[in-house]
Image (cartoon, rainbow, N blue to C red; front, top):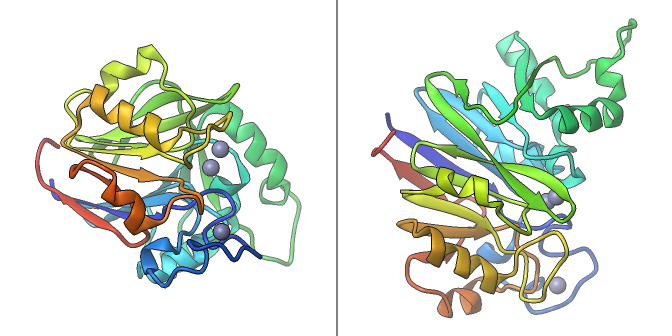
Length: 259
Ligand SMILES: [Zn+2]
Ligand SMILES: [Zn+2]
Ligand SMILES: [Zn+2]
């Protein structure tokens, strides 16, 4: 199976540039320093699956020229990962079908509360996203012949989920990877990891700690994501080993092996 991963956004919750900031990275001319909120698009066998619908989802779908959407997987219910849910509507119109979404029970509770109008059963004159809700636990989710295995992660005192599919794992928003999740991360070709900034943060990984995870988990290649304006693309990459790179919006990876 040939599979393409496109990085839709590599920035932290406020995005880069950050509104009002005039720092070197926020005013950089390097397009790789323009980071929308964190998400990826996984394409295979004519299917499009996205992980998270960020507040920038509309812009991301336009930029990547998405013409259909087959499923959404949610990592957790923080605003930077869910607020684009309303922009599923064009796909409902085009495909004339409901879009399946996948989330844990805890994430679904938040989505139902934050997007109560979607779940309200009365009549309305306005259009609402039409979704089918699927709750996942620790078991792999089969989407159109490809298994997405949830990888439990600690996000400060909360929980979030990364996903492994084939030999690729996408782990955003974590401060720690619990030991029971480590066996799911063996033998990876590509590992995406949260690397927020240089200074410690209660709910995210620092750049140095992300490098330590790469050394421990030994993927062929690693890409860092969910980055703040502390990390300028070019300057930061110079300090990293060759097989560890910073993700950037629009980055595409093609995988043929091990799926
Ligand atoms: Zn986040
Ligand atoms: Zn800045
Ligand atoms: Zn988060």
